[in-house]
Image (tube, rainbow, N blue to C red; front, side, top):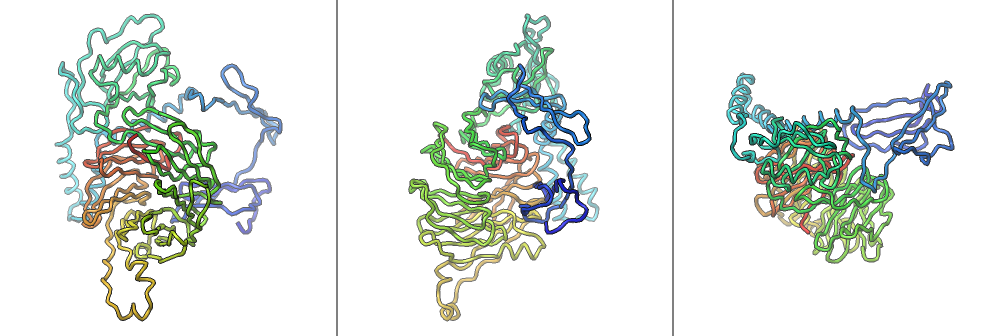
Length: 595
């Protein structure tokens, strides 16, 4: 901010660019750090109406853990804030308010409805087909596709005495049919201290009804539900106001009222194959999850509220290397939960990490326009790789001492790992983006095969080759002029989404390479990049997809998004196998594997 006119002293200037908001008291002494891209801009001027006293603290708590903080108002009115204080280490959460639970339930119902009927995938495919065919009468064309889809939509049958069947779509949702409730399930006269719990599937049909104590563990409720419904405990996911109930918590901890409750049951009976997942969030949390039952194994309490933006995990040694928004790098022992190494790697946020676990070497890329090579055994920086722009993706060929970095300006830069010297820049994707009036928003790089898939802000994917190798670049200009080099294939551009592609992970092969991408519209898609063929479309998150991880040999993938959830996917057909409400803030990094 160079200058301002008419802004009151002591006010606050609030600037929002896309999903990011920054605030500073007036006059502004430091620059606002905002994401690049064609984001809508909003500026608000805020004025202070009141503030807490210098002696304010959270030490004066009542029996319910509440603290009343008096405020000093500028106009003399009485002003105070009542806070609910709780210890995150205890795992006990405060009971949500009626407004919070209603909002959470509305979002969960919307997400479940879209996932159940796969509406987002259908509409996306319909518009792709419409733009490709361009019929003279688009409304009749779309009506015919709607009629075809309606024929495949399963009808809700009447409740019968048949055993409980799994959904034919095998999506991680409740079954489409349920058994008739047994006579003993209809609880009328409950013993003292019990409440009636009605369990329904996602479509609202009753699966079972039983009595339960509000201090009863969720695992005990699931065990009795398994006897009534025939659904194994490991396949059950009980939802209350849109929130998954962990096995080791009680109904009371989630605010289940003494008057009774109606819960939803989601079923995930497919083999996860990826047994564990590690998630990092904007709230600064790192959590380890068991994907066989969706339960939390360990909360690492990483030591602050700075977002965990990047991670690499070695499941054999149970080590994880993470990079945070405050520029810190940390090495974790996943078994004990202890931090083995904590160092300030960059002065700005770290966007990417890559690790050679056999030799304990690591790479980090950050918004300070550098990448760094680290010796993890000594905790020392070996080389600083100058990038000239924000580094948000890294790919290394450790055997040949090469590393490629995807830069915010769309360029891919290659360095020599042994010396830290720049070898070459490649800019075909950024040129393709400029030609279409867009910019590069994500990239996956094949450092060995010299290829890349770049995602653009307008939803396109660009599959391109990096051109001549570093060795060829070092040749003399006269030799380059006389020698005939094989021509580099032209970039292939395809429309993947109608919003920005925010995350990409790729499986590189000589033929049939695949790329999984996540978009700002909350959906995912899988592509064969050499033929521009869409292999699968996935149900959606509520909000931006920030991070992806793919276990290609096991045909499984994990995605983390703005809604604080991460999802486990079957790459063969796009089915959602499990949804975990992992954090209260967006999931910014995710890794999966088998312990």
